[in-house]
Image (cartoon, rainbow, N blue to C red; front, side):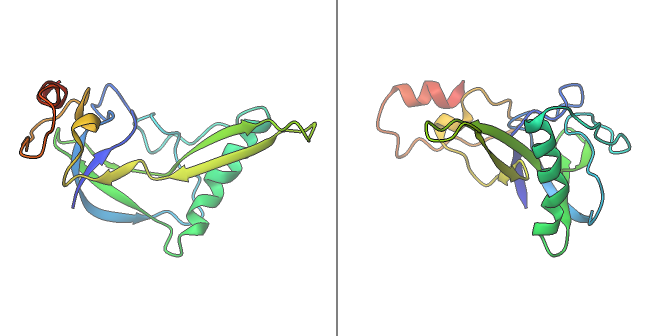
Length: 150
């Protein structure tokens, strides 16, 4: 299945937002500490971070495979030849409240991939794409051609 990467993982290896590839398999990672995102090396494990937000992120990342009964992550072969297991990443946001003295931590964990069959004109702007087909049959403004091609 074709996929598009949604985050910059490793600039040197070309694993950047918009990188295209295909899922070629899945890797079980149940109970593993997943590698630090962006290192490019699956052998380097995440370092413990300091601070409440960092500890929350670490807990969420360690718990993520438990949400998936199989504990599997996709192996993607990118069009530049790189082949990598794409692990989940977690974003933590501190939510302040006028009613509470202690802010809440909200997190979202997801695998940074989306199906790559198609992207919108606006999502394509700024992406480095190895190949594409532009369908302008339903564009409603002349400026959309410029947006799609930049």
